[in-house]
Image (cartoon, rainbow, N blue to C red; front, side, top):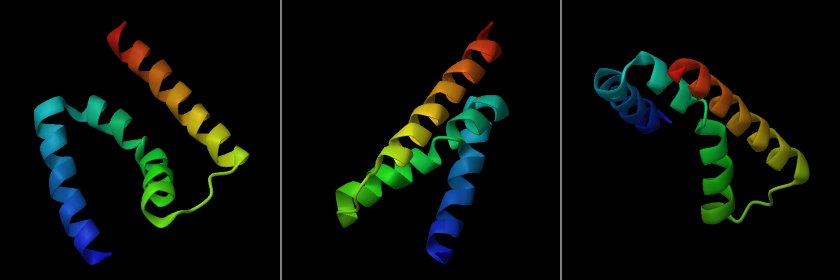
Length: 71
């Protein structure tokens, strides 16, 4: 967990520097979906209906936030 933290924070800071705080913040909300996908692909975890529903809500929220940021 320490390696993940020490790797994630500098990469997030680079993302903020190059893409801006708003875009980096919105994209960071996709982390739970990445965790579910990697858990299923690498660890063979089962993805249930509630996880898929939650992922769809997150994606929908990101789309709404992105539209408000652009327009």
